[in-house]
Length: 247
Image (cartoon, rainbow, N blue to C red):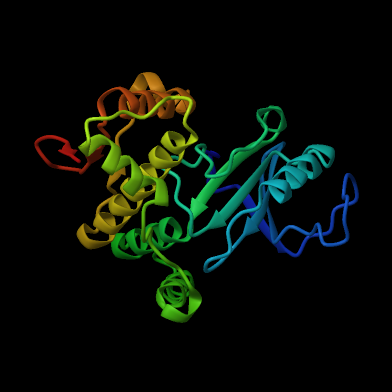
């Protein structure tokens, strides 16, 4: 969400060591992005996981505290877990910790897809940058790197299907409903990225305008619809088509 003009200076660092608020010797974020534009500087810590390694809630919350104590603006996590919107984090994080530090999440598939779209757009005219982008795509596309799509819904999915087929319903107090909706959102996001790569156009999961500023409310609506009607639905926005694609 940063407005980066041609005069902006972007610096990146790896294995950063921070002075304030570090609670353990291994609290060393994978990277730091710094954007300087005129008199404004924006900093973001990076924490990345690869393959089947998942994000750890306690580590993320520690890094949010470290970011706060070092006046860092944001924490960006990267893994094979999917988020429909970067602000909709796959981990359930203490909301108090994100009041002063923004928390974003990107999947590796998202990054790969954006790289492929940028590569295909021919917007990059610098030959060295174009070469580096092509090598990044080749690297992330190799099977040994461990960039994976969303492979299966949670175990509670099959149990819920059985319940609905028998004429039953899920209780809102049942934590399975949260897990199922989260899995559904990951599946939809993965599908939108696969279609983006196939069509060479940016396909997105549609979110109502009234919910874009409050993604928690959007998720809660989906959970309530699942419990009340046994229905999950999504819309994909595909450029230059007549209407939305419904799932």
